[in-house]
Image 1 (cartoon, rainbow, N blue to C red):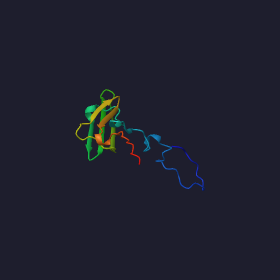
Image 2: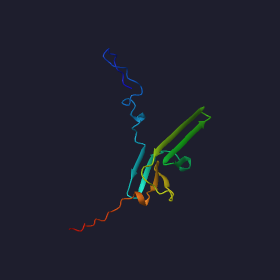
Image 3: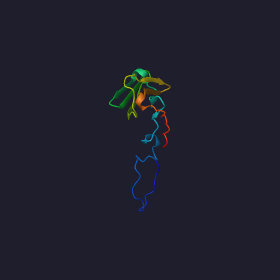
Image 4: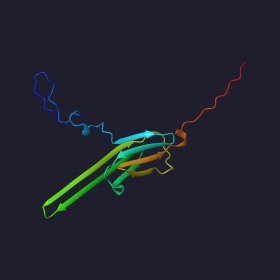
Length: 137
């Protein structure tokens, strides 16, 4: 946090929640990526350090829920030292487009990134239109 000298011309005191002071806590942190290809809708989420068994993924009514938790504990009785750290990820995103509910989405974790792929339905895929010439009079 930056120290700011008080001035009567300041409209307000800076807040500890100002995004300039804590860029990692801003809502614009890039932890979730959603995009479409010609055949799929892809969701990528950061779940760094979490084992695949500790990631919970639920898809209901067009909304994808991702929850991942990790806890690490260590204890050294000789030095009377105990430490515990936790990491938690929680995402909720509406999946765009028309997806094929008959096909199971694929989900895999690689290098701390969870990738979920939904197949698009045939109705949502681009179609090439046939152009016919109108008969002239």
